[in-house]
Length: 457
Image (cartoon, rainbow, N blue to C red; front, side, top):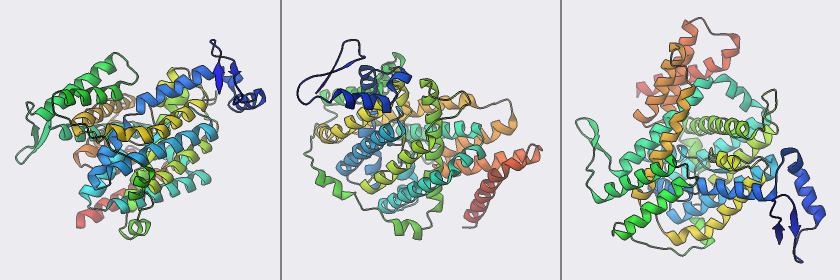
């Protein structure tokens, strides 16, 4: 057992089970406590803060992926396990306060585009996630990830994040019944007096108010508050489930890699790869900049280890039964609480592992409680479009096309392809193209060929 002094600086070993001072000193040296001004109390509290702000994924991810036919108990277990594994690996290996979990947006793409729209079995989709993780790992070792980051304009990074935000918010609006399909106008306003929709509106308002008050666990509190409100008014029924690790076998190892290769899932793999790449880069830059961990020459130390942890977590996630794993912007909440080392990520990972045994007690979460979280997360992701130079048509038009085509075509791939292709063409016709843009034009040519091929069918 380890106790901490009230100043939060000096760990005070107590009891026979205490760690020796030399071991504690080595841990502090490894994580550079002195250089970063870190204390055990602050680092642990930062980890708990990060967990509370992203714990909603334990309920939201299974709610989304279960629509593919995946057993919800197994997906819940896979979500907790891969988040625990990825976060702990990130903390130990890369020594950054970055927590990992199945990515929002990518889980929606996995479910609504790949499985439901393209009618690809979830086992095959998991195979595509696995292959994207392996390619990610290879690109990391080859140093190509940095090359890809430089090839795509930063403005499109922002519009992709915004487009994904609109995509998952649109899904949330449909899940709640606020927006419904209409044969004449495509979509229309739903029946706001329906009990389930009213409960969802309450949850949306609750999370929004908590966000306004800057409550760190606002999304999780909002889900729980909506759930309790629904239970009080008879809209939700508590159905706790017994769980053991054997439940995980329903999805663990069920991925179909051969099927992913045979169905020509190159586009799917590319989307998983591309979105994961830039989502991680954006999160990484935002969190490390806020923590003051970027060097004076704008370099991020141990970058390859960060990418290795992310790619490995994605592979483990596909093997256990969930969509692509990526770093979470909610890690910035832990940084704001003072986290500077890898300890917060480790603490977050431990909390996710413990949740593996606690989450089933809550039981399945209805859409009325989880869908408002999708809408709010989508809204928060739209903040990135402020980085776009809307006065420059060369940038603004591709950014806008990317932003709107992702939700309107129900496909991140289409939005990416149209955005990259239009940006490359406008850059070419404006005379701004240089030799350094060769990879951008290669990607654009591949997308244009893809659209031409699809239009034949």
